[in-house]
Length: 71
Image (cartoon, rainbow, N blue to C red; front, side, top):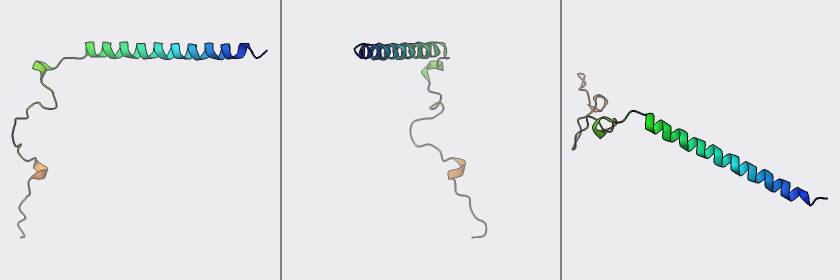
């Protein structure tokens, strides 16, 4: 009586697929809620680019060569 076995396996696979779908949907809803609750950017300014002006940027402190008094 192995006839019922494939249908049992199929039900189990379908149940797992449904669980995965539910988990994905819950994750999508959670992500959407986080995006809705997160603070918006002020005037649409990207915080990583704030204060940067177009064109060449001044050298950082570590990029400036210090004069060696012994040379």
